[in-house]
Length: 306
Picture 1 (cartoon, rainbow, N blue to C red):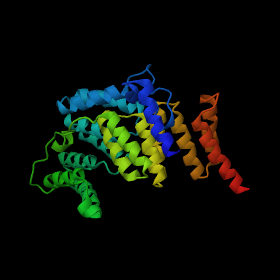
Picture 2 (cartoon, rainbow, N blue to C red):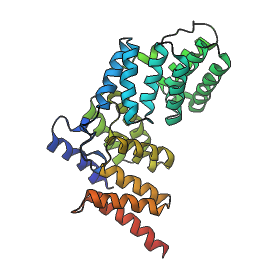
Picture 3 (cartoon, rainbow, N blue to C red):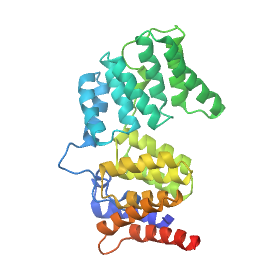
Picture 4 (cartoon, helix red, strand yellow):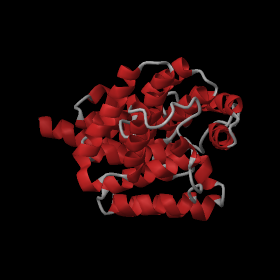
């Protein structure tokens, strides 16, 4: 995908679709069918309501909301993390641990999940397991040295005070976990991420897109660009997970089908790449840029092999 095409996709989205375009998933990543189907619950609204419930200490309501989100995107790290917080707030620490471990599995940089995981283990009297969560945070802090994210330091120090006994192991979620701060303004954050992608600054783009996703909830366009940026950094497994989430939200997202096909091309899984091309043939009966870009990538590999 060219720099010009990435930038134009977003500009056209704003110009044609109006204020609701971003939340609907209308155009990021090269093309969308219009976002989440209106026939089911809206995971973005459920996500927002779940955050509000967590901040208000209404943990049962938060559980219900994040159950809706996870019904749409079960591999979303943020939703699993917040469900873990809600379970912990209700004193269901065994259940909380399951969701927190999933959050870490899907995003190893979900620092708050390590923090709450250790706290939940401490609440269950399992100090050895809590120490393992702290050890993981210590290892990450040692690796980044003076460049560590503030969230990592806060999570490590918070859990350390619990595990080492200088603070009580409260049943409620870790205090810093609920300091979500102001919700991100979607369009500005999205455009900033697109600019970073255009410049090839994929690590920074991923950081910005993650903050955006944590603020607004699962969005096919955001997830698609997380996949694109991850793929450009050679993180193919993570990229696959992001594309799968994007398509779970919008099965007809043309950009996600293109990028997923390109990922399969890079992995030389050509049958899977052609399957994505066939999907784009169906979605674009009169042709579209996404279909042509993927077809060119497949053809280049075939020619190179001959």
